[in-house]
Image (cartoon, rainbow, N blue to C red; front, side, top):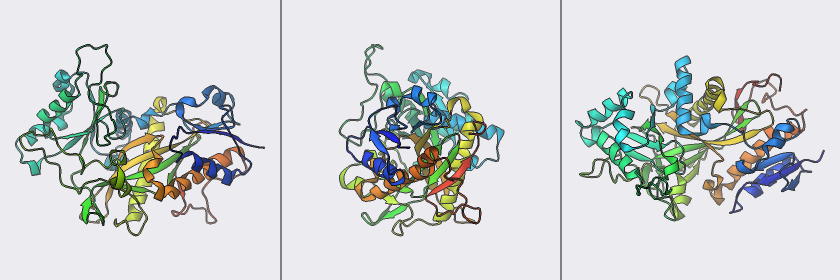
Amino acid sequence: MTITACVDYEDPTGYVQPKIIKALQKYEPDVEITDEPTSHLQWSAYETIDWDHIQSNPTTSLACSYVIRKALIRKHYLSNTVSSWLVKHPESVLGRHVPETYHLELDYVEYLDEALEEMYELRQSLEGNEEREQEGREWWILKPGMSDRGQGIRLFSTYDALESIFQEFEPESDDEDDGSSSFPTTGEDKSDTGVITSQLRHFVVQRYLPNPLLLSLPATGQNHKFHLRVYVVAAHALRVYVYRDILVLSASEPYTPPKAAAGEDGDGLGLEAHLTNTCLQSGERQAGSVHRFWSPSTLLPHKDAIYDQIAAVVGEVFKAAVGSQRIHFQTLPNAFEVFGLDFLVAEGDEGTGVPRVELLEVNSYPDFKQTGKELGEVVEGLFEGVAEKVIRPFFCKEVDVSGEGEEGTESKEERMRLVYEEDLMGGW
């Protein structure tokens, strides 16, 4: 039959939508692109998906998102997902590949001391830092639980510094009903990392990675901090794939260990060498901050081992979401979703020299434009993988997506690597 597809990705730059359509037409040559939300395929913004139609037509309609997935995409929910899973499965790889994290719920700065009461290890670290020199301190990173694009992220090493951060977030007006921002919102200045009132209250505090693996950039001739952007496709209920073409996103400034500004103990700490979000960069800086993981010019050691770690962590975190947080991660047999997962990489252990990845966060509807025009084929390959592994098999049931080759095993070189599979719907 002819497949109708509503492709409306809210893409004002025209970067993403043509790539989606091109991928669909490659695997479904007769696809009819329409703006009708009750089409067979809805690949559009979350708010515009016709969920009544999706739920009423489970075998003939397909959506590009799950209805509920905050167990993964909200930072404080992800922290709960991981901690709950580790209580039941202390041997899980998540114990080694997720940074030490605390969930902090706070309405006003005067309640900070009370909020930290049960976080003994964190309090002990902050108190110990008071007696340490700058170079010997343990650093922590604060993130609003529902913010993105680097907004609200701060580094701190002492209680006083953390308190001053929350004072910075306090509303400018005493009128609680005026809807005013508690900190400047992101404007034209891409380096602005402010947050708005609605993003506050829930925070996560993570241990700052003290020994990040660094990337040498020819443009500066110096070492830069970076993180890995890994695209992951969750399909139906449930298969999870890792897209092989990983991105390396580097900070705009050469790396230096965190150090508070003189006399300020945390206030005014520059983040340019520590934040690797491309949305905070512009112009030439942004163009030179995105690299392909597998490129020979991206000089990183033990790439195969890093990739295997990523695959194991991705499979396990989705297993944790469905195993311990089903109410907050609900799959559908006729839905799929593309996530962007961010990983930091620590220097290799002294014994093996193999770097260690750490999962930072899971993003829904990731910003594909960060690849830039030069790396557009990365996004094109991702969408082709979705069309091949998810969309075409859904509408053409005889297509095999088991991932098994002639010898019954999936090649690590495949574009889409199956890392987790479980029948959550009883015979879907």
